[in-house]
Length: 200
Picture 1 (cartoon, rainbow, N blue to C red):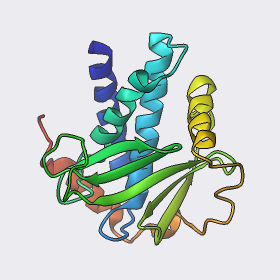
Picture 2: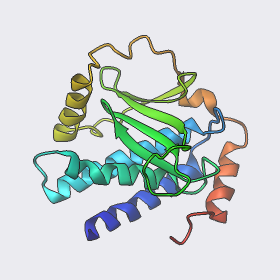
Picture 3: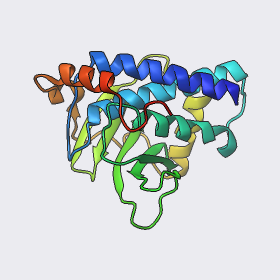
Picture 4: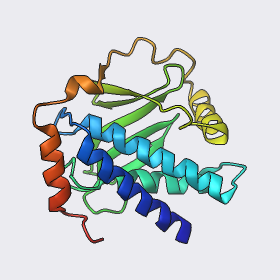
């Protein structure tokens, strides 16, 4: 448990750096560029957790901290949604985010989907989208998906019927195409001002 707290602390510091130095993109009210940045930080933290614990086999119980890390990352300041965000790892290697009004990380009736993040292993990228209409992508950093985590997530995709080439025709915009003038200064001021989850 102490190790997870350490990882969450590292996650916060890592995201704070990202929020200060990266630009933003807004699509349907959700900043998809920040979604991708936060996903990368959560996945790197989880890989570190696996390495430190010398975990050699993944199952649903071992994967539980991953969705917790994703949820924590999506709810950091600056806020990317007006209410708390829950995250569930659904079929394949898809992270589904939803409006978690009661903050229990369980999608209840009346808590709509917000966005999803999919892993395109063939294209070595993460793809964030909202309702299938707005997508952006990011290259997967070399070494982010290694060994067991890579194999397990790919296995989940294959079991769900997602085959090689599934994302080949997906039309996406790159993160850089979303960057708006003044986004960096906005991110800096939001990071300094704190917000709903500061101090928790």
